[in-house]
Amino acid sequence: MNEQQKTELVAAALEARLMAHAPYSHFSVGAALLSADGTIFRGANVENASYGLTICAERTALSTAVTAGYQTFSGLAIAAAGGVSPCGACRQVLAEFAKQLPIVLVDTEANNATREVTLEALLPDPFSS
Image 1 (spheres, rainbow, N blue to C red):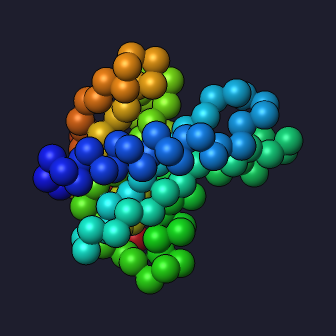
Image 2 (image 1 turned 45 degrees about the vertical axis):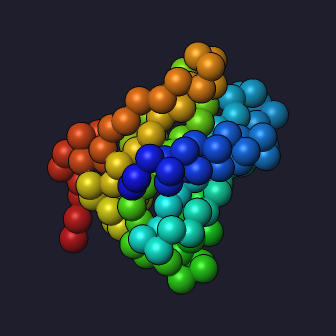
């Protein structure tokens, strides 16, 4: 992921965050997933009154990409208050497709400050069959 792609991913994640459905937690998250060919897929968290049915922004973006026929990814940006990293479920699902995925965490409470991590650092030993 180059600097221009990083900038575009951050912007897409910030835009996606505005579409979140978070009436229970009031914690909106946006994600933008970069495919190997440069296509960006957006996702937002979608909460449900039955909390276990809530889907995270990262998995929304990934599901959209896979449904469109994509399975190779080269970057992810996540925008949320505090610049949070993906939950464990999202880490495992992302590892199915890109174990060394570069991830940009965007802190919407700190003037959209970013920090970069890798999925491998967040999930060093993913489950696999």
